[in-house]
Length: 213
Ligand code: BG6
Ligand code: MG
Image (spheres, rainbow, N blue to C red):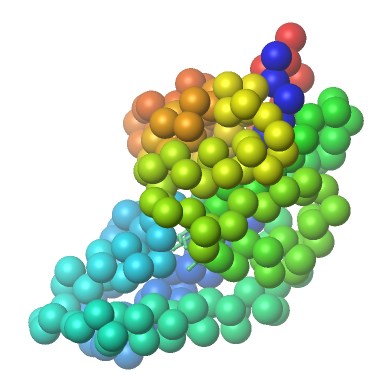
């Protein structure tokens, strides 16, 4: 029987994948590097530095580590400017109800997001009061698809990972939650998320009661 639900944030609760894309696109334009929504697909669930490495695959020169840190910071500045203006409108449809349904069933809730901006974003979305614990992406040794962030989230709500439902919209996220030992619900399409234990098209289709009978 499940005791907690571990949520990814970007693309599961929040419509923020597009905001990440806009910020990366602005950086790519600054650098004169080709970047589009298809390449962006590969950045989902991936850490900031790993995302930058993917973006720089198309660069005409190489960048030093010091330069890369500056570029990642610049992208983060662009992203923060965008999210500071967000309101609860940026919640995906059904996200708030999904969190409320967990509350109703006495399930703990935690965030297992790769984003270091997760605390700011949930403030802007006004859902902080519905989330019991936020795993700190900055403290994870290995990023998704490694299990670290889901293990930290389970620990944060004092549950065995086996007693946790996990929701993620990215392949790397599904792999991370599987490796942690959670029951994994992929949010999106079956082809991309084929390693998940169950698939729902979006968060509006999440009914915790379906998994707790
Ligand atoms: C993930 C997003 O949730 O967080 C990625 O899907 C993003 O696109 C990653 O790169 C890291 O986010 P941040 O806010 O720490 O740069
Ligand atoms: Mg995601």
